[in-house]
Amino acid sequence: MSTIFSKIIKGEIPCNKVLEDDEFLAFHDINPRAPIHILVIPKVEYKNFQSVDPAIMEKMTKFIHRVATHMGLDKSGYRLIANNGENAGQEVLHLHFHMLGGAKLTWPNVTNLDEAKKFI
Ligand code: 5GP
Image (cartoon, rainbow, N blue to C red; front, top):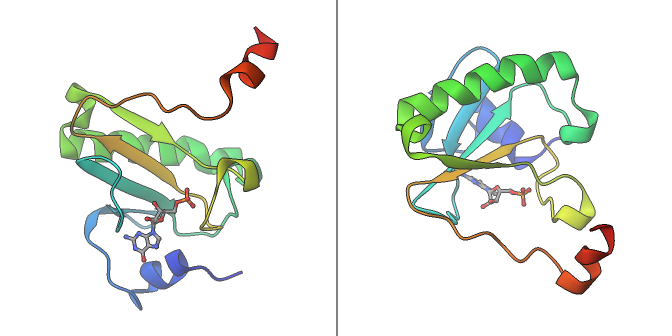
């Protein structure tokens, strides 16, 4: 399946690039939810985190660390999110991590909290 991120990787759609190597690309989200909102994607297409080869994640972790250092987020802190599947609201079916930072972030109310408490 080809997504909008495949087109960004091929350069068919422009992006505001942060960092790139042979296997990964980091670029600014077009609809930022924080002062810094970066998307990190592998160039090989995986639908989401649940279907990724764990061996890729080892390399991707190192790349995310590099992006954090590049942006100063390693010192100030950041939130890393991978929306996975329908209930998480994943819109683009190409594995991506959101890196959010640049300010103190609020913790979202992700669902009905009474429902959430059933596992406590
Ligand atoms: P998801 O909801 O799938 O976790 O997140 C998809 C993200 O991709 C959203 O935050 C959305 O703003 C971002 N996005 C969608 N299309 C584009 C695009 O063409 N360029 C960029 N830079 N970000 C995009």
